[in-house]
Amino acid sequence: MLAALSLVCLFWVIPATTSPPDSPLDLAPSFIPMVSVSVVLVLSVVLALTALRQRQEDASLDDEFGADATGMGRREFVNLGFWTLAAAGAWVVMRYVGFEPAMTLFLVAVLTYLGLRNFRLVAVIAIATPIVLAQFVWYVFEIQVPGFWR
Image (cartoon, rainbow, N blue to C red; front, side, top):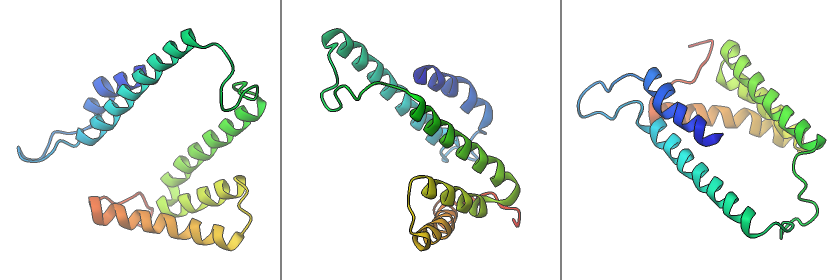
């Protein structure tokens, strides 16, 4: 599945949504996405081949987890649902209020869900991280993150 999605990105999504370079000496805007998706493609193929090879060699229980390696259950689906809703919510909220406020809310929700109960630490992480990331992206890549004030 991951390999198929990588191929779709490599041959359709990235070429269709990126522009050509501004000059012959510039890197194409599609360069970094193509490299990262190519890495995902290679790793997914290696993972699939490894899984197929191990399935044929050893059908016993997992060495590390033993009988606890039971796959997806109700708890895992609830966890997956939370992360999916949190990511989708952060994406939607970011469109209206900007990167810093959306990521602050996202980090508060996620850190609280993960069990971090030191609320001063949650506040410092949730406020400082989006600001530092926005500044980093601006000064390193000269890209402004979304914001309603920009």
